[in-house]
Amino acid sequence: MSKRPPGELEGQQGKVARLDGANGLPQGQVTDVKPLPRELPTVQYKEGRLAKDFIFHWKNDKPSLLVLISPEQMVGSNKQVKSRQLWGEDIYTDDSDLVAVLLHLGYYASNNTASNPLVARFYAQVTLLPPQEQYTSCFRNAVRSRSWFSTIEGCSYKVERCWMVTRSGKQLELQPRADDCAITHPTFALSSSDRQMNTRSTTGSSRNKPLTEVTVLYNLCNEPWLKYSMSSIADRGLKSSQWTSSRLREECLYLETSRLRFELSYAGTATTEEGQADNYTFAQCKRVLPVSAVRGLGVPLPAGEAEPVEENLTWDEIQWANMSMTVRGKQYKMLRMHFMPRCKGSQAQ
Image (cartoon, rainbow, N blue to C red; front, top):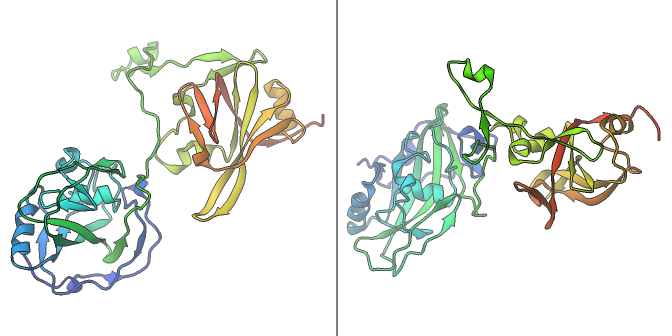
């Protein structure tokens, strides 16, 4: 253990842009580092071994201390995180793993399975507390803590702050996520229930990778469209440019039920309490037209050809399912789908 004042950490404080959890960086908000606490004992994080240090400092009337965590351990693949070695909500037992607690509180993205090369180390300031009467379970930021309703020996603790030091020496304060909802990266992964097939190209290949079978249905104009499915509608990768929401900036999505056709199109951005957000329009097509006719009128369709059903939609108000989609609480059973590039009409109707 070292009692070196944390204010002597090398590096400079500064402002940087918010870091994105998709790149393996913190999912919480990043701000300036507050003045670092001085004269606090510092301990090194070790998987499953912090409880002894906590109890030692608690018995020696040192209720506050710093914990140094290496970036290789601050990952969701940490064994203590995977085995859910944490008990409590906000206040945790002394044997609760600190990395699991930080992920549970939302200081860092729990879906990061590899350390980020830009981060040199993490620091967490914890306050030691007396044992609690009970510790309740809580699902938060994709991590579920355990419950414990018996008296424990030792102490409890809560996290006061967390910050990181980058390789360049900048110190960044991390803030917990208060909405209890982790930033996820929704992308489609082939499940065991999906049909797979081998083609001549795959069987002749040394890799022999199976391909997903693509189902094509005929739309209301007797043209081939893709069958509506999660594999066709979901994001195509983890990069923001591969998200379906980004794709809708350049394309419109047409969907069909057994009798009706709908159009989902990008309608610009709007300012909300959380900042800039994309808006979408969900409209019902007045006529069922072939693709060539739709392209001639323009994509998205002009006002005379599409009647808005829901306007000023945010992405969170659109929910996708295997056989249906829900728009502002109303469910539509979809059968077919087709993406079309946005274009201006070449003819007048």
